[in-house]
Length: 183
Image (cartoon, rainbow, N blue to C red; front, side, top):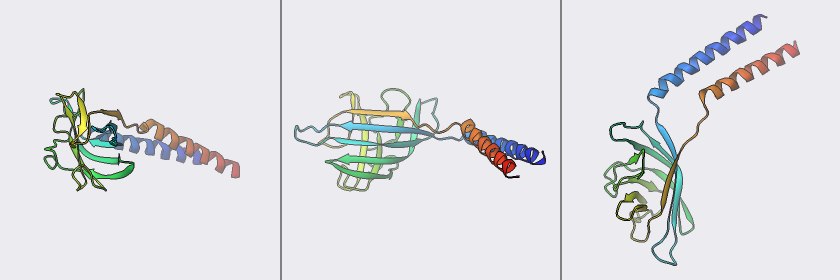
């Protein structure tokens, strides 16, 4: 009986501690979005460009109705060659990027966001800029060889805190039953 009491106290302490951590971090939580885009080539025999990965952003700015992209991970594929995305470029670095992600359509601004790949990129130096054109009503990269195509985002899913707590309680109970069985 003493072991059950100790396990109960440990589980409650873990739950309260975990909940406190979750509550504290929620106020400062960054948003994560999976992204994917595919842009055809202007030339009929050209190669399309595609990329996918995760965008790391600030919380939604309710005044401007956008997020600021603070990081990126993923891959970009050109001419059958997949390049690793190394990181986000600071605003104004390439293509006059502002690194904003809008909460509604269009998802990007005319300045878009820029990142660096482990490869040649658009400019031969690894730089890539993805933006929205109101004139063409589409998304593209800052390259004369690339046409306009689709750019989509979906919220990145992470386990709910209650799922993790439930797992901890289940593991604790299983451990207790195993100990009880051994005794």
